[in-house]
Image (cartoon, rainbow, N blue to C red; front, side, top):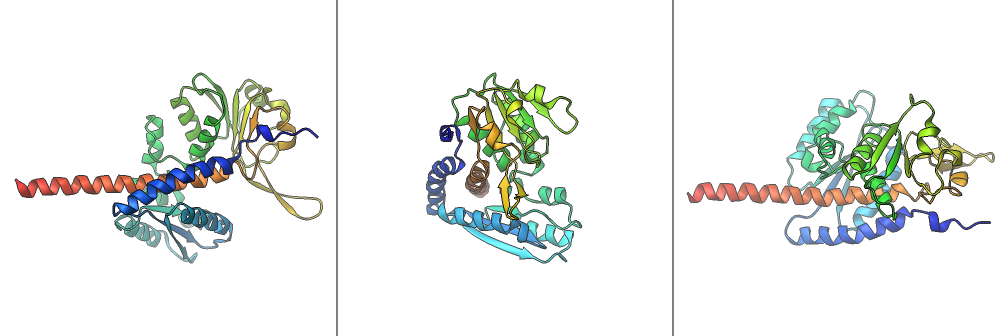
Length: 305
C-alpha cells in the first residue's frame, strides 16, 4: 500500500505551532493588565454545538485564555439575546464573544452577527470584519476562511499568480477565501451550485478549496496532478455496519493519490480554525487595550490643558 503521509497537511501540527505564539501573546496581555477572556453563547438545543464548545474551551485553557460558556433556553427572544450581547460589548472584562450555531429559527443570525462589536468579533463575522478583507486589510476575518488560507501557505506554492478554484460561495467561508486569496495575488475562480462543468474549472487549478457540505463531491478526476486540495467540508455519513464516520467534501481515498497536498477530515482545517479563533481573541484584547489607552491619553490631555 502506498504511503501518502507526506502529502497530508496536518492541521493539528499547524495549530500547535500557532498555539505557542498565542500563549506568549496572551501571557503578555495578562501581565499588562488585559487578560484575554472569551464568552460563548449557545441558545436552545446545544447538543450540535457541544463538541465545538468543549474543544474551544480546551484550546483556550491550553493557550492561557479564560473561557466562559453560557447556555440560554430556546425561549430566549431575539431582543433579549441582543441585550445580552450589548452587555458583553460594554463589559471591559470580556475580550470576545462567540455565538454558537445553530440558533433557534426565531432569532435572525445576521442581526446577531451585527450586534457583536467589531472589537469583540473574534469569529470575524461582523460585516465590518468581512469588509476589511475586501479592502485587503485583514484584522479578524472569518476563522474557517482564514484557517484554510493559512494551511495553503504552509505548502511551497506561491500565492502570487496561483490558479485557485473555490467550490462554494457562502458569505462566511467561500467568498472570504476568494477575497483573501485575491489580496495575496492569486487568480481565483469561484464555483457554486449553478456552475456548469465544475470539473473543467477544478482541473485547471493549482489549488482547490471545497466547502459545500456534500460528501464525495470532489474526486480524483477533478484535480490537476500535484494540486493542493483544502477540504473544509464536515459531513457525517453512515457506514454499512450502522456506525457513523466524519468525512469531508472530497473523496479522500481517490484524491490523495493525485493531489500534491491534501487536508484530512478530521484533523485538517478544524484545528487551525480553533487556533485562529484564539488568535483573534488575542488581537481583540490588543485592539481594546489600544482604544482604551488612546481614550485615556485624550482625556488626560483635555484635563491638563
